[in-house]
Length: 318
Image 1 (cartoon, rainbow, N blue to C red):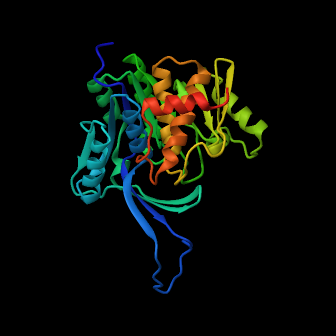
Image 2: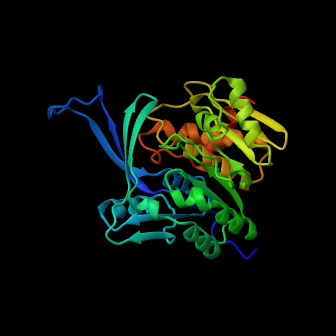
Image 3: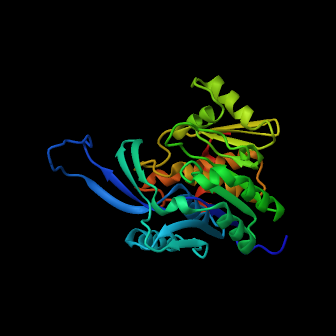
């Protein structure tokens, strides 16, 4: 492999997030106007993950497609402010940049997304970016929002492995709720689902701990490291027959919202894997990065540096 130009190439969705919070966000029709607090922040699972990876100390580039509208300008500016290289962004003239609206209620939220230009991202875009950037690692995000990634992801995995890079995937939720598992998915080196995604990717309808454990084992059967996010409770991981679990005690940090916490978890896990940390230590760093990201509204405002995540990781039960 020739010398890497970056540590990580993230491939996936980029858009602004509009965060809406208030005492009661249930719609009242008939042109009723109500007070709410709103913020426009960097969004898209890939965008947030890329920002988290840059923040935790990895040289990071993002491969995504945006429009040439004001939302595209805003997304690109916010991405640059987080230290992510934007030379693999493709700007599409006349197209609308995607937008996600998050209605926030405590640690839960409802999300509405206009995909816009993000759906124009192709596997060929990613393969060309791998050839140019020569990353040590490739992270794929939100594949169910991006049809070409789900369909042609095998070409991306092949290009990454041929270049000597490892691959991680966070499928995120399927808006169509089909969760059809791409044939290439289990060829990734690391899979980073939450509990719901792990169950649905393996066709399981139950939700108890035994079912989640069985789902993770199935996803890990071909050799991938599988780390299953369990929200505020922590996470567990399976790799090469080894299992680790990390519980996150309540009250370790202040809490604003959980937007993008899973993507920040991904950033911590990728940093740990590239550093060669043992499985439990990797899981601790990932949980710490995800937890710290909840300190401020939006997915990127409170993302952890490597020192911050490492300090909190040491406080998590071993």
